Structures are given as structure tokens and as C-alpha cells.
Length: 218
Image (cartoon, rainbow, N blue to C red):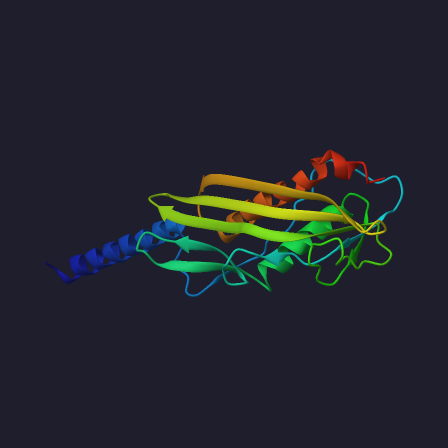
């Protein structure tokens, strides 16, 4: 075999290797080292209920009852078995609390931060607020599993939300809300963020379908 032929075959092999790498990155996502940081947020519905007059509601930080690391909200696994944690900046409890606050504000309500609440009527301390919201995260998790030509995403959210009447010092409602999403997608970090944001927002929006609570909003 001549020198020119060897050079040609070497170039073909190099191009084939490059194409193989690019295809692997496209279909499986290039292997990432360490935790994968996600930016997750509340997605307000297209049509928002606007309040006729301002009402102040207090929001106490969610408790994290998942039994997992405070900042971890999922796992990504690729075909070779490598797994990476999916994490958020701060904690998952802070994320859920911020999303609830955005949901309330998007409906024309004034939102006030309230220190930790033990979710009892006796423990309510929210001067200046008419309603107080708090609760516990049962599940907030995204499982990302790569296989040939696709990535399967499964998002699960379960929240227990407690609402209290501050002036009357009584619990108004304890609402269990949940959401699940299953999708097959081409992998991207943005898609992970989108699916988990959608699942969390869908669960939170169920709070505003509760008839007893709706009576208390202006």
C-alpha cells in the first residue's frame, strides 16, 4: 500500500471517529463529570386570575421531607452506567418556596416572607398577612435515562400545602397536590429544566383550583 493510500485511509478513519463522537453526543449527550446544575422555575399559566384588590399573604419556607440531599432533585444515567446528580443552586426547599411565591404574585397577591412555621394554628406568626402558606415536599425528582437515540425523562412532584387564616388563628386547608410527566426527548440540559419546571408548576397551580381557598382570594 502506498503512502498516499495510507494517508487517505487514516483521514477516513479519523472522520469516522469524529462522526461517531458527534452522534454519541447528539443522541446520548456527552458524558458530564460531577453534578449537573439545573435552573428550574415557575411557569405562569397563560391566563392568570387577577385580584380585584391587593391582599397580603405570607409564605413560610417548605420543609423537605424527601429524605435526600438538600440540593439534589434528580439523576441522569447514560448507557455506560455513569450517573450524575441533578442539582439546583441553593436547596430544593428554597426552589419550591420561590415557585409558590411567584404563583401567588402572578395572581395579583402581595407576598410576604414569613419565618419557619410548624404548620399548626398555634404556631402562625405573620403580622400583616391574611393568609399564611407553608407545607412539605413529599417528592420532587427528575429521572433522566439515556438509551439508543433518545433520553427518557420522568418528573414527579408531590407537595402537601397548608393554608392558615392568620387573624382567626386556624388552619383553613391542607391540600395534597401532585404532578407526573413522562417524555422521550433528545438530551439537553434545557429540556431537563423545562420538564421539571412544567411538573412543579402544574402541581402548584392545583392549589388555585381549591374552592375553599378561592373564596378567600379577592
